Length: 600
Image (cartoon, rainbow, N blue to C red; front, side, top):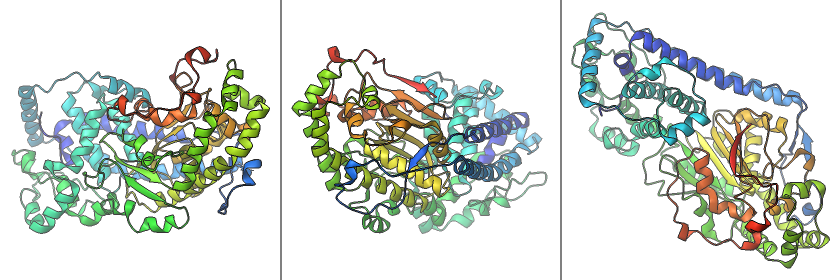
């Protein structure tokens, strides 16, 4: 297979003018669809937990009263949506003119000649392949494809079209979450399997086998850039000058594809990305100064507010080439310090992965309390009494046995409430870190279980309050102790450019017990679906999750169902979870349904 294009203008060769117009139309339709998902009527708004500053304390009294809540008005939600649409419009207005510039290039005889030569080379290489894969089916399920005649083009032409749009997006020196979602929608519409699109992203980091760091260092040492660009880029009469404005523009605005006009082909044109990697300021901005912000002195200031607040790199993240996507995993409790990274080691290499460490003592204390709870005699008695009811039904009907309530009030309520308040505070600090671009100008995926999901919920609330859009591209909430009210999530939805996944189980007795003190009239996200929210998908794991403590062991399966690339998991390496936290097969409630993903 011939190399992927390294200059967005190469699409002029891959696609004729009519096809380029179709590509522009497709991009515009996708953006319109993205905007329509944000513009949702908001009525009868739900409530959200107060995000006012919480004083550090032992939480003894907090466990015995509902958390403070304040209503979010329809006007507030509408204002958030309006601001999100405005942000999307600014991003669209920056991208579309660049695509239009390429579309308007005239197909000169020289370009036609080059296109025919390229077509002949493709026929000799026989790059045809079956693109109908399970990964593609999942991608098209998550990002419903817009019909386009471009799917009839050879796969290599479609890939180069996708790559060209990606490079145009990178030409600003930024890669916000909206850009990544556009690329995923475009890959779905063009019928390109996810590995192809992710390989293109990897190509942008490792052009000619080099990492961003190595490429920048080499260019700095050699200092051959000016001479590099003097060859083959002089303007030729009749050549269309395509000004790719923005962060990468300087070497390109005055140039044209003169090598095409000379019939030499694009091999003589200096790599578009070589200019990018040579610009240390741009690379540092995109990757957060090569990832130093994620682990550097900036984290010390946050650690003063939330104990142990640090981003822990996974899978040798600092040593690996930086990726255009970053994922942060957040734990809900700990049974040992090593648990911080353990659930997130399954994340695949397509994303630069970190685990968020915070409040170690508090989360370890909660882990001990949870284990003591599920091993107690009262808990085993509860399981026998609730065989015919789901946890959600028990919570809503307040049908907890007296001995369980007595045990909870003395052993679990205080540790949970204390950890919950600290988790929400950590979530607000996480939002501040993301707004300050510790991750660079890259999109971030947030994944968390239990109180880790509560931290993400608080993070989204803070981002919404600060009108910080285009930072988070996707969210996975696993067993979240958070409200499930539709209007509440419609107000938070605009800060996530892609999909919010709500992973829940109706049989999570532990979550039902510890969340019983909260505003149950707004539901519990970890026990039920969140309905009627665009781009929010519910995954019902009632059959697989019959105990709250099982979630960390199933992160690989859950993330795979959410479209994440995951590494194989060694079942033998999985730790045993006390069976007291689960229901035996013959104890399963009649209401349990087969685990399946649902779209709402």
